[in-house]
Length: 88
Image (cartoon, rainbow, N blue to C red; front, side):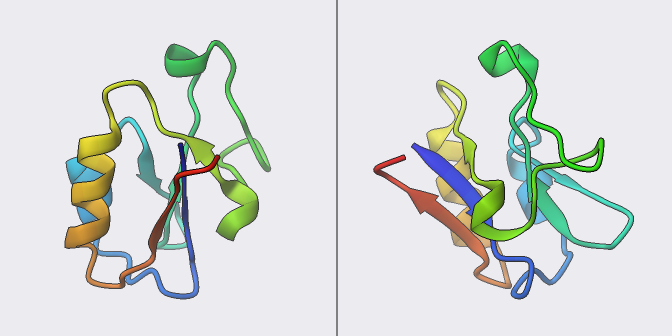
């Protein structure tokens, strides 16, 4: 499964990072992004040296055991901007 954030809807509250720091992180633009780390998958996806691209182009795999926290982050997100791709 994969997850991505629609930055057009992101309110920058950071609840996603609080709930699932292995998956979400904030940047200087005040928005949050998904990450795919070497610790989880053996390689790290980077864009501009910092993050995956914005939107669905920045889709990242959900780490093993992380689905529950990603679902909670999506449910708690005030911008309703977190999307889970069950086929990915």
